[in-house]
Amino acid sequence: MTALLELANISKSFPGVKALEDVHCSADAGQVHALVGENGAGKSTLIKVISGVHPADSGTIHMDGQMVRFRGPHEAQAHGIATIYQELSLYPELSVAENIFMGHSPMRKAGPAEVIATLGVEKGALRATFRPEFLNRIDEIIVFHSLDEEALSAIVDLLVADLAARLADHDLELVLTPAAKALIGREGNDPHYGARPLKRAVQRLLENPLARALLEGKFKSGSTITADADPVGGTIVCTGSEGETFVSEAAGRRDPRATGEPVGAGLQPNLMDLPSTEQSTDDGKKRLN
Image (cartoon, helix red, strand yellow):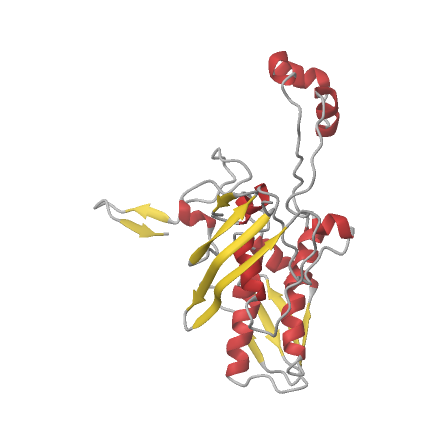
């Protein structure tokens, strides 16, 4: 009988570490298996190989008797493999089921009338814009709503919670003012990519500068570090219990003008778009604005 999932001779190495060596295992439909081992035994690495996060250095994976090679998690998910990681940064306003299905929520089909109602567009206006042949072909819809300041602040709280926990291990307390959360939210929110750059904004404006300050010994054990916003410089100012202060550098700020593309919500240029950072001189050479 062919196993639903079968791994043979799986090996995986990282620089200086051989995480997996010649691993064999299989699972049939309806079975529950447990991976048991000490820290560093390779349990997480094996799961990541199965789910397409890490490619195996050698060995094969078969599903229903067919050899598969996943180039990423999405390909593994398409074959029915889903991984729920030990991740504490959940969405508290969502249910357990919604957190589990985040990123691959079930969809249902909707007819043209329901699509129109969901979009909040009058039937007359929509029919005046699109041909009936097009409207009759609509059977699925996903509505994306822009993130408001409250939603961005909640995401910042989730991202900063891990940093605050690590600082607490060193007897340091981190407090963010609403202005600091709003600044990080604005810096990490992109009109085209949404909140995807938010984690980098937290690292750039808060986590990396704090790490440098701690290495320099600026904050003593037991201090409360308050992070506030400098709206003029677009930076975060951190102040300790005894008045010690440092300011995050603004030199590395994300400037969407550097691409030369419009910065507004749409791709069409308009009068509200920022000018390009490059200007041409009389000799044809470019210089930064």
